[in-house]
Amino acid sequence: MARPIVHDQHVQQRLLAVTADLVDREGPARVTLRDVAAAAETSTTAIYSLFGGKAQLLTAAVDDGFRSFGESQKAAAKGGLLELGRAYRVWALEHPALYRLMFGGALAAYVDCSPTPDVASDSMLPLVEAVVAAQTAGRLRNDDPTMVAMAIWGQVHGLVSLELAQMNDPATDWAQIYEAALDSVARAWAA
Image 1 (tube, rainbow, N blue to C red):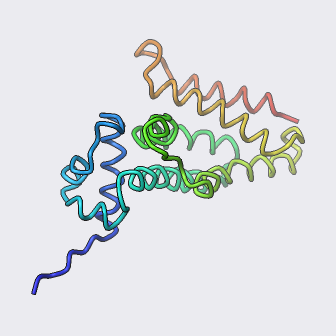
Image 2: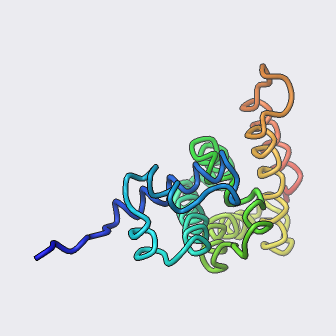
């Protein structure tokens, strides 16, 4: 009697990581399930049994990115807005393929693939909570917390995206630019 094939969490995580890397390098249209399975050293059967198909695999990869990002934000939350900003850049630099997969827009153009709304929203909760805490402490203007959080996110996101796209001179000191931007964001929203 044949032993049943077990597709465990390790296979699932390998598939998600490989998917992000392959889509980042090749684009979603060029990546096949066979490519993903081969790179993850498994079978297409594993993909079908764990995810369903290509669209579901891509959605799962995006969701996995948002979960990982959200965990890094939760870990940095006790340090307040400045630490959240720093953690944002660190996570993006450590996971460039996932970052581009999550925010690059290439998937939406190829297939109906977007993050699960609750997963994406949960990843941003630490930022909104930090804004509320800073407002309660009287350190930030008392504007709508979600609006403030989105404005802050847009600024840090833009800089990180430029850095990952390798814009400007290769000798550009992105860390210094990023710290200056965090400082200006803090001053702009100060109470």
